[in-house]
Image 1: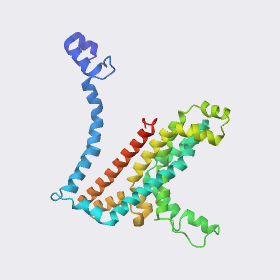
Image 2: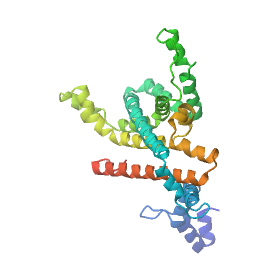
Image 3: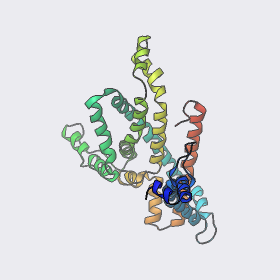
Image 4: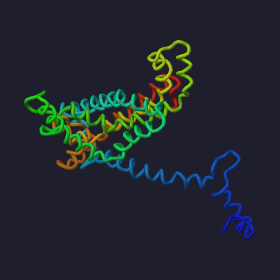
Length: 304
């Protein structure tokens, strides 16, 4: 039954139904019930995928079996866990820098090339992004192992006599994580570069600025919102990366996510795993807040 038919049958009911569910007011706002229905799936997703698991971890780390803070004290008195946390921060930072250095030229080429070249670059960026992280991590194992492709090439060309130890090193973790997360850096930068009018670099060139000066004074500052967005997303994802460090890094490059996985699946120490998870979440939130404050204080980047 349409709203018109409802109105003819019962004007009062139709008016209430229309006000509650159909009509957008003069202010452009949705009716209360319709607005609540629109955001209800998002609220349910937030509750069951984030708030409830985090609450269970927090409760388990503090009240299993009774109230105790021993799990948190253990993190700070045993050097291993702080060392793992610092290594995680370092690898996440280095991965973010590597993704930016390698990803910015790719995003610039996508934004400026045009035509089929842009299409092919986009395919090269998006196809790995759509591929499973597990598959990409195993691909790096095939490339970097002692009898892998890279060692075979170096030995076959006479550069080396013995295979190098490339896998299960911090360098392997950095290389693989940079490759896996680079699309996350490229896409926001590409989006910002696309919004820069092509006439601005041309105007700077007409005023005597060289290519390098035009990039530093015009292109790079205008693309900073995308750079900051890509940097933040890449860094946060790198902090909690699990599959790639576990497969490529091994026990020598233990990171927080791998450590939490060991505590839950191998040692079955869920309260201590909850304490480690809460520490990682707290560090992530603090760094995100500091990064957001830095952007706000920079001025002009408040929309990132």
